[in-house]
Image (cartoon, rainbow, N blue to C red; front, side):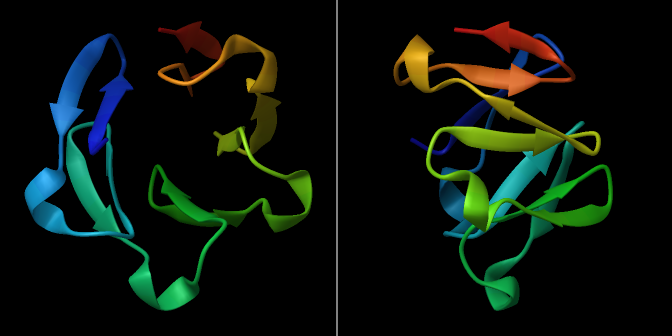
Length: 80
C-alpha cells in the first residue's frame, strides 16, 4: 500500500498519510473531500457510484476488478 505506478514509474507516498495520491510526480491531498474521490491532473473526480476497483483517470472511468489487487490503471493502460 502507499505505492502507485504512474507513467511507468513507481512512486511511494507512505509518509503522506491517507487521502493522498501521487499523480505525475506531484502529491495531492483530498482528505477533506471524503472517500471515493481522486485528484487526477489537478482536478477532483468522484466515482462513489462506480464501486470498488474503479478509477477515474483523465476524466474517464476505468474498472480493473477482474485484474486483481496490485494493478493500477494509469492514463488508459493497465499496469501490474
